[in-house]
Amino acid sequence: MLSQSVETQEERIAAHYTAFAHLAMQLRQLTKARKHSGSPEMNETIRYLTGKIREGHLMEFGIELEWPNS
Image (tube, rainbow, N blue to C red; front, side):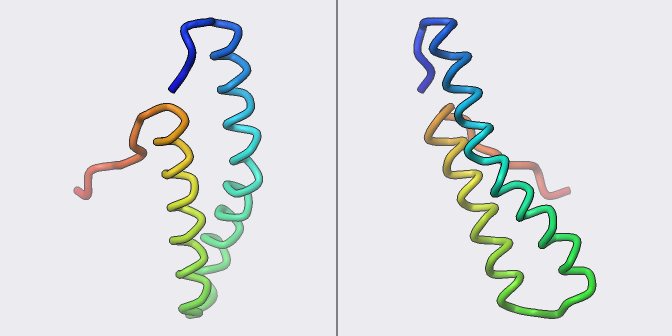
Protein backbone atom coordinates (compact mmCIF):
# COMPACT_ATOMS: atom_id res chain seq x y z
CA MET A 1 0.00 0.00 0.00
CA LEU A 2 1.08 3.54 -0.58
CA SER A 3 2.63 5.55 2.21
CA GLN A 4 1.02 8.70 3.56
CA SER A 5 4.08 10.68 2.44
CA VAL A 6 3.49 12.31 -0.94
CA GLU A 7 7.16 11.97 -1.85
CA THR A 8 7.16 8.27 -1.00
CA GLN A 9 3.97 7.80 -3.02
CA GLU A 10 5.58 9.46 -6.02
CA GLU A 11 8.66 7.24 -5.73
CA ARG A 12 6.59 4.04 -5.36
CA ILE A 13 4.36 4.90 -8.33
CA ALA A 14 7.40 5.60 -10.49
CA ALA A 15 9.13 2.40 -9.38
CA HIS A 16 6.00 0.32 -9.94
CA TYR A 17 5.35 1.48 -13.47
CA THR A 18 9.01 1.34 -14.44
CA ALA A 19 9.23 -2.26 -13.24
CA PHE A 20 6.17 -3.28 -15.23
CA ALA A 21 6.93 -1.28 -18.37
CA HIS A 22 9.15 -4.03 -19.78
CA LEU A 23 6.50 -6.68 -19.11
CA ALA A 24 3.86 -4.51 -20.73
CA MET A 25 5.98 -3.99 -23.86
CA GLN A 26 6.52 -7.73 -24.16
CA LEU A 27 2.82 -8.33 -23.65
CA ARG A 28 1.97 -5.80 -26.36
CA GLN A 29 4.30 -7.49 -28.85
CA LEU A 30 2.88 -10.91 -28.06
CA THR A 31 -0.73 -9.77 -28.42
CA LYS A 32 0.08 -8.34 -31.84
CA ALA A 33 1.94 -11.50 -32.88
CA ARG A 34 -0.90 -13.71 -31.65
CA LYS A 35 -3.04 -12.53 -34.56
CA HIS A 36 -0.69 -14.37 -36.92
CA SER A 37 0.01 -17.41 -34.76
CA GLY A 38 -2.09 -20.19 -33.39
CA SER A 39 0.52 -21.10 -30.80
CA PRO A 40 -0.92 -22.34 -27.49
CA GLU A 41 2.41 -21.48 -25.84
CA MET A 42 2.02 -17.86 -26.89
CA ASN A 43 -1.44 -17.71 -25.31
CA GLU A 44 -0.03 -19.18 -22.09
CA THR A 45 2.75 -16.59 -22.04
CA ILE A 46 0.25 -13.78 -22.64
CA ARG A 47 -1.92 -15.01 -19.76
CA TYR A 48 1.17 -15.33 -17.54
CA LEU A 49 2.39 -11.79 -18.22
CA THR A 50 -1.11 -10.36 -17.81
CA GLY A 51 -1.39 -12.13 -14.47
CA LYS A 52 1.96 -10.80 -13.30
CA ILE A 53 0.94 -7.23 -14.10
CA ARG A 54 -2.42 -7.66 -12.36
CA GLU A 55 -0.76 -9.23 -9.29
CA GLY A 56 1.80 -6.45 -9.07
CA HIS A 57 -0.84 -3.75 -9.33
CA LEU A 58 -2.94 -5.38 -6.62
CA MET A 59 0.03 -5.90 -4.30
CA GLU A 60 1.42 -2.40 -4.78
CA PHE A 61 -1.78 -0.34 -4.79
CA GLY A 62 -4.47 -2.66 -3.48
CA ILE A 63 -6.47 -2.13 -6.67
CA GLU A 64 -7.55 -4.95 -8.96
CA LEU A 65 -7.11 -4.52 -12.71
CA GLU A 66 -10.40 -5.95 -13.90
CA TRP A 67 -12.83 -4.92 -16.60
CA PRO A 68 -16.42 -6.03 -16.96
CA ASN A 69 -16.97 -8.66 -19.65
CA SER A 70 -19.65 -7.00 -21.70
